[in-house]
Image (cartoon, rainbow, N blue to C red):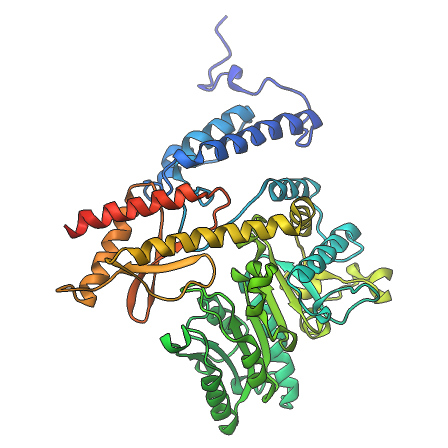
Length: 510
């Protein structure tokens, strides 16, 4: 009798395991996570030898891995093998000690552990009742950080004696912090102007320096502001590219005289392009004349302000309405973690609150708790507070300050190297751990020639895989940005990078 197996896929190819599917089988959880942790440990051990910037081409991963999802299960070892052979070679290694581009994306063992545990618990803490500990932990971590930053108690959820009028929330990015505060400021200005609904929205005006992160202008459009009423105020070397309060006053007054409603100004402490610092106190004084909401974007440099020697950059913060900073940039807490503080939490929640029947509960009705869903765009939210608390609880203030000071010292060392080489110039003063430098125009080399030389220098450096730098344009000059701060960086990496820069510069200029 002939075989009944006429199907090209034999029965032997079908999964033989008839056991029930248990995606959270405790032994699988233990085995998979042990292998994942081993992978992570090995990754950090070997990352220094990997090219910082990959050489893959768009679409490479679909060519290497199946373009369609598998029908049947595979061993977790197969999954990990494909991760190692196909995914890792296509990664830009932000954790590499040879990564000097953009701003650092810092991390730590405590943060990774916190994120892992939070992912395992997988709580969705939209209300206090949905997960009391998740909300309480976020509130506690934010208040701890507020104390490290020496923020006024008006920004805290709780003081030592009572619940405060202010509050905080952990969001994903600075973009979200800007968006929710813009919405709150918009609604307040509409009420103030006697608007029926949003009829007066075309009269509302927002302000920022031309060095402010581009996400601000995006958030303004999302919040419904007329693009014609978004003021980008020019800056220059006379203020080290910080916002000039006199210019801000002039522009706001002109708008008010024209019947417009000044609504919101964003001050930045540590701009992305050059680390410029807007004078917070002076900006707040101008804004107060027009009842304008003041937001401080301290995404990167806010972390430095846990050190007393940098805290002056936040002077005047007691007169602003909101401030945000991102521990995922420089405070050893992995993505995503942006901390937003507001002086009056009700101004935020009044604009963002949702209260469907299925979320009503006694704790919320009591007014004694914070429902964090009412301080963000969405409803669902991750347990971000755990990793931030674990970082502060594990390392303590002294170690976190040591981390910041070490990065600043290495950046100063690099700045000194640049200043000692007559071929280069430091374009703007270094405020924190970012050095903006370039090959300078000299002799027969014009500014245009220098711009091209710096482009070639950056491209050649990045092609080596031994360092990765990004650029910006400051004062119409093409400038290289050397950002110190990767969690694995040591002085030897700064020295090696400088040696590579010198060698590469000689090769293109000789």
